[in-house]
Image 1 (cartoon, rainbow, N blue to C red):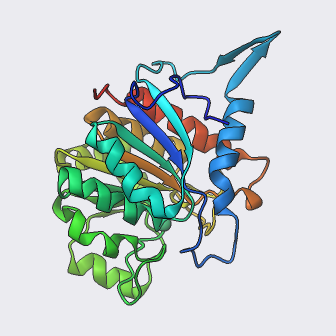
Image 2 (image 1 turned 120 degrees about the vertical axis):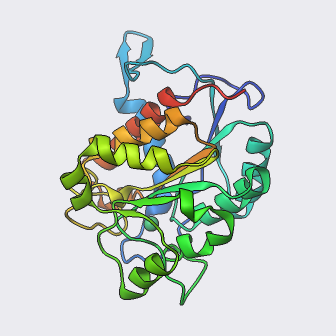
Length: 282
Ligand SMILES: [Mn+2]
Protein backbone atom coordinates (compact mmCIF):
# COMPACT_ATOMS: atom_id res chain seq x y z
CA UNK A 1 0.00 0.00 0.00
CA UNK A 2 1.31 3.47 -0.92
CA UNK A 3 0.80 6.63 1.10
CA UNK A 4 -2.11 8.65 -0.27
CA UNK A 5 0.17 11.56 -1.30
CA UNK A 6 2.01 9.37 -3.84
CA UNK A 7 1.08 10.55 -7.33
CA UNK A 8 3.61 8.93 -9.67
CA UNK A 9 4.46 5.29 -10.33
CA UNK A 10 8.19 5.51 -10.96
CA UNK A 11 11.32 6.66 -9.19
CA UNK A 12 12.59 8.35 -12.34
CA UNK A 13 9.85 10.98 -12.55
CA UNK A 14 9.72 11.75 -8.80
CA UNK A 15 10.76 14.96 -7.03
CA UNK A 16 10.10 13.40 -3.62
CA UNK A 17 10.70 9.75 -2.70
CA UNK A 18 9.04 8.26 0.38
CA UNK A 19 10.26 5.06 2.00
CA UNK A 20 9.63 3.23 5.26
CA UNK A 21 12.09 1.51 7.58
CA UNK A 22 10.10 -0.90 9.79
CA UNK A 23 12.93 -1.38 12.29
CA UNK A 24 13.15 -0.58 15.99
CA UNK A 25 16.25 -2.62 16.82
CA UNK A 26 18.16 0.41 18.19
CA UNK A 27 15.35 1.60 20.46
CA UNK A 28 15.57 1.17 24.23
CA UNK A 29 11.92 2.08 24.73
CA UNK A 30 9.70 -0.03 26.98
CA UNK A 31 6.90 0.67 24.51
CA UNK A 32 7.45 -1.60 21.52
CA UNK A 33 5.94 -1.29 18.08
CA UNK A 34 7.48 1.66 16.19
CA UNK A 35 8.37 -0.85 13.45
CA UNK A 36 4.62 -1.01 12.69
CA UNK A 37 4.48 2.72 11.95
CA UNK A 38 5.34 2.80 8.21
CA UNK A 39 2.52 0.39 7.43
CA UNK A 40 0.02 2.02 9.79
CA UNK A 41 0.71 5.57 8.58
CA UNK A 42 0.16 4.51 4.96
CA UNK A 43 -3.00 2.58 5.87
CA UNK A 44 -4.52 5.45 7.84
CA UNK A 45 -3.57 7.98 5.15
CA UNK A 46 -5.57 5.96 2.63
CA UNK A 47 -8.55 5.58 4.97
CA UNK A 48 -8.78 9.07 6.46
CA UNK A 49 -7.09 11.42 4.01
CA UNK A 50 -9.16 10.28 1.05
CA UNK A 51 -12.88 10.53 0.23
CA UNK A 52 -14.86 7.93 -1.67
CA UNK A 53 -17.97 8.55 -3.78
CA UNK A 54 -19.08 5.47 -5.68
CA UNK A 55 -15.97 4.13 -7.37
CA UNK A 56 -14.14 7.45 -7.24
CA UNK A 57 -11.42 8.00 -4.63
CA UNK A 58 -10.30 11.57 -4.08
CA UNK A 59 -7.46 12.80 -1.83
CA UNK A 60 -8.04 15.59 0.70
CA UNK A 61 -5.11 17.88 -0.15
CA UNK A 62 -3.60 20.73 1.83
CA UNK A 63 -5.08 24.00 0.53
CA UNK A 64 -1.94 24.89 -1.40
CA UNK A 65 -2.14 21.55 -3.23
CA UNK A 66 0.69 19.19 -4.09
CA UNK A 67 2.87 20.35 -6.96
CA UNK A 68 5.68 17.83 -6.52
CA UNK A 69 5.79 14.41 -8.07
CA UNK A 70 5.77 11.96 -5.18
CA UNK A 71 6.86 8.33 -5.37
CA UNK A 72 6.38 5.83 -2.53
CA UNK A 73 8.98 3.11 -2.97
CA UNK A 74 7.71 0.98 -0.08
CA UNK A 75 9.73 -0.34 2.84
CA UNK A 76 13.45 -1.07 3.04
CA UNK A 77 15.76 -2.72 5.56
CA UNK A 78 17.92 -0.67 7.91
CA UNK A 79 20.97 -2.03 6.09
CA UNK A 80 19.63 -0.54 2.84
CA UNK A 81 19.20 3.01 4.16
CA UNK A 82 22.59 4.32 3.01
CA UNK A 83 22.27 3.00 -0.53
CA UNK A 84 18.62 4.07 -0.82
CA UNK A 85 19.26 7.64 0.34
CA UNK A 86 22.34 8.05 -1.81
CA UNK A 87 20.39 6.95 -4.89
CA UNK A 88 17.64 9.47 -4.11
CA UNK A 89 19.88 12.45 -3.37
CA UNK A 90 22.24 11.71 -6.28
CA UNK A 91 19.32 12.75 -8.51
CA UNK A 92 18.60 15.80 -6.31
CA UNK A 93 15.31 14.26 -5.21
CA UNK A 94 14.09 14.76 -1.64
CA UNK A 95 13.91 11.63 0.55
CA UNK A 96 11.14 11.36 3.15
CA UNK A 97 11.77 8.49 5.57
CA UNK A 98 9.22 6.88 7.89
CA UNK A 99 10.61 5.08 10.96
CA UNK A 100 11.11 3.06 12.89
CA UNK A 101 13.30 4.18 15.73
CA UNK A 102 15.12 7.50 15.64
CA UNK A 103 18.61 5.98 15.21
CA UNK A 104 17.72 5.41 11.54
CA UNK A 105 18.16 9.18 11.09
CA UNK A 106 21.88 8.75 11.79
CA UNK A 107 22.25 6.47 8.75
CA UNK A 108 20.23 8.86 6.58
CA UNK A 109 22.23 11.93 7.60
CA UNK A 110 25.54 10.13 6.94
CA UNK A 111 24.37 9.41 3.42
CA UNK A 112 23.07 12.97 2.90
CA UNK A 113 26.48 14.27 4.04
CA UNK A 114 28.23 12.36 1.26
CA UNK A 115 26.16 14.28 -1.31
CA UNK A 116 25.81 17.74 0.28
CA UNK A 117 28.49 18.02 2.99
CA UNK A 118 27.59 19.11 6.51
CA UNK A 119 23.89 19.97 6.72
CA UNK A 120 21.85 22.29 8.89
CA UNK A 121 19.86 19.94 11.12
CA UNK A 122 16.43 20.94 12.39
CA UNK A 123 15.67 18.33 15.03
CA UNK A 124 12.19 18.14 16.57
CA UNK A 125 12.21 15.97 19.70
CA UNK A 126 11.21 15.98 23.36
CA UNK A 127 14.60 14.43 24.09
CA UNK A 128 17.93 15.90 22.95
CA UNK A 129 19.15 12.44 21.84
CA UNK A 130 22.57 13.83 22.82
CA UNK A 131 23.98 10.94 24.87
CA UNK A 132 27.72 10.51 24.30
CA UNK A 133 28.47 7.76 26.84
CA UNK A 134 26.73 5.28 24.54
CA UNK A 135 26.34 5.36 20.77
CA UNK A 136 24.47 3.92 17.81
CA UNK A 137 21.02 3.96 19.40
CA UNK A 138 17.99 6.25 19.48
CA UNK A 139 19.35 8.29 22.41
CA UNK A 140 22.66 9.21 20.79
CA UNK A 141 21.55 10.41 17.34
CA UNK A 142 22.66 14.02 17.67
CA UNK A 143 26.04 13.08 19.14
CA UNK A 144 26.49 10.41 16.45
CA UNK A 145 25.80 12.88 13.60
CA UNK A 146 28.05 15.70 14.89
CA UNK A 147 30.67 15.01 12.17
CA UNK A 148 27.97 15.33 9.48
CA UNK A 149 26.12 18.48 10.56
CA UNK A 150 26.97 22.15 10.89
CA UNK A 151 26.05 22.83 14.53
CA UNK A 152 26.18 26.63 14.03
CA UNK A 153 23.29 26.41 11.58
CA UNK A 154 21.39 23.60 13.34
CA UNK A 155 18.72 23.73 16.04
CA UNK A 156 16.78 21.43 18.36
CA UNK A 157 13.08 22.15 18.87
CA UNK A 158 10.71 20.77 21.51
CA UNK A 159 13.38 19.67 24.02
CA UNK A 160 12.01 19.23 27.54
CA UNK A 161 13.56 16.21 29.27
CA UNK A 162 17.35 16.29 28.93
CA UNK A 163 19.55 14.13 31.11
CA UNK A 164 22.46 15.95 32.83
CA UNK A 165 24.88 14.46 30.30
CA UNK A 166 22.78 15.93 27.50
CA UNK A 167 22.60 19.37 29.13
CA UNK A 168 26.39 19.25 29.31
CA UNK A 169 26.68 18.25 25.64
CA UNK A 170 24.25 20.96 24.50
CA UNK A 171 26.46 23.52 26.27
CA UNK A 172 29.73 21.96 25.14
CA UNK A 173 28.74 22.03 21.46
CA UNK A 174 26.71 25.27 21.61
CA UNK A 175 23.67 23.55 20.19
CA UNK A 176 20.76 26.00 20.09
CA UNK A 177 17.60 24.67 21.70
CA UNK A 178 13.98 25.81 21.59
CA UNK A 179 11.84 24.43 24.43
CA UNK A 180 8.04 24.40 24.42
CA UNK A 181 8.15 27.22 26.99
CA UNK A 182 10.36 29.27 24.64
CA UNK A 183 7.72 28.77 21.98
CA UNK A 184 5.00 29.95 24.36
CA UNK A 185 6.98 32.98 25.48
CA UNK A 186 8.39 34.18 22.15
CA UNK A 187 5.59 33.16 19.83
CA UNK A 188 5.82 31.15 16.65
CA UNK A 189 6.75 34.00 14.28
CA UNK A 190 9.83 34.98 16.31
CA UNK A 191 10.92 31.34 16.63
CA UNK A 192 10.43 30.88 12.88
CA UNK A 193 12.59 33.94 12.20
CA UNK A 194 15.32 32.67 14.54
CA UNK A 195 15.36 29.30 12.79
CA UNK A 196 15.31 30.65 9.23
CA UNK A 197 18.09 33.16 9.96
CA UNK A 198 20.25 30.37 11.29
CA UNK A 199 19.84 27.85 8.47
CA UNK A 200 22.49 27.20 5.86
CA UNK A 201 21.94 26.13 2.28
CA UNK A 202 21.32 22.40 2.83
CA UNK A 203 18.75 21.69 5.49
CA UNK A 204 17.72 18.32 6.86
CA UNK A 205 14.63 18.01 9.08
CA UNK A 206 14.20 15.14 11.54
CA UNK A 207 10.95 14.84 13.47
CA UNK A 208 10.50 12.58 16.45
CA UNK A 209 6.74 12.69 16.91
CA UNK A 210 7.29 12.87 20.68
CA UNK A 211 8.23 16.54 20.16
CA UNK A 212 4.48 17.09 19.93
CA UNK A 213 2.39 17.01 23.10
CA UNK A 214 0.96 13.54 23.85
CA UNK A 215 -2.51 15.13 23.77
CA UNK A 216 -2.06 15.35 19.98
CA UNK A 217 0.38 12.48 19.52
CA UNK A 218 -0.17 9.80 22.18
CA UNK A 219 1.11 6.97 19.97
CA UNK A 220 4.85 7.47 20.35
CA UNK A 221 7.56 5.31 21.94
CA UNK A 222 8.56 7.71 24.73
CA UNK A 223 5.82 10.29 25.40
CA UNK A 224 6.56 13.40 27.48
CA UNK A 225 3.86 15.83 28.63
CA UNK A 226 4.03 19.63 28.15
CA UNK A 227 5.04 19.35 24.52
CA UNK A 228 4.60 21.41 21.38
CA UNK A 229 1.27 21.97 19.74
CA UNK A 230 0.84 20.04 16.50
CA UNK A 231 0.10 23.27 14.59
CA UNK A 232 3.28 24.95 15.83
CA UNK A 233 5.38 22.04 14.57
CA UNK A 234 3.48 22.10 11.29
CA UNK A 235 3.99 25.86 10.89
CA UNK A 236 7.75 25.51 11.35
CA UNK A 237 7.94 22.40 9.17
CA UNK A 238 6.18 24.15 6.27
CA UNK A 239 8.30 27.25 6.70
CA UNK A 240 11.56 25.28 6.62
CA UNK A 241 10.29 23.18 3.67
CA UNK A 242 9.56 26.39 1.72
CA UNK A 243 13.10 27.56 2.52
CA UNK A 244 14.25 24.29 0.94
CA UNK A 245 15.16 20.92 2.42
CA UNK A 246 17.42 18.11 1.26
CA UNK A 247 15.55 15.49 3.27
CA UNK A 248 12.98 14.79 5.98
CA UNK A 249 12.25 11.95 8.35
CA UNK A 250 9.38 11.29 10.74
CA UNK A 251 10.21 8.75 13.45
CA UNK A 252 9.01 7.02 16.59
CA UNK A 253 5.29 6.70 15.93
CA UNK A 254 4.18 3.68 17.98
CA UNK A 255 0.79 2.49 16.72
CA UNK A 256 0.36 -0.05 19.57
CA UNK A 257 -0.02 2.83 22.03
CA UNK A 258 -2.00 5.16 19.81
CA UNK A 259 -5.55 6.30 20.50
CA UNK A 260 -7.81 5.64 17.52
CA UNK A 261 -4.79 6.01 15.18
CA UNK A 262 -4.69 9.76 15.72
CA UNK A 263 -0.87 9.89 15.74
CA UNK A 264 -0.63 8.00 12.46
CA UNK A 265 -3.26 10.32 10.98
CA UNK A 266 -1.43 13.41 12.24
CA UNK A 267 1.79 12.05 10.71
CA UNK A 268 0.11 11.44 7.36
CA UNK A 269 -1.28 14.99 7.28
CA UNK A 270 2.07 16.48 8.28
CA UNK A 271 3.74 14.62 5.41
CA UNK A 272 1.13 15.94 2.96
CA UNK A 273 1.56 19.48 4.27
CA UNK A 274 5.38 19.24 4.13
CA UNK A 275 5.25 18.02 0.54
CA UNK A 276 2.89 20.84 -0.40
CA UNK A 277 5.52 23.31 0.85
CA UNK A 278 8.51 21.73 -0.92
CA UNK A 279 9.50 23.55 -4.05
CA UNK A 280 10.13 21.31 -7.02
CA UNK A 281 13.70 20.18 -7.05
CA UNK A 282 14.28 18.52 -10.41
MN1 LIG B 1 14.30 11.00 19.26
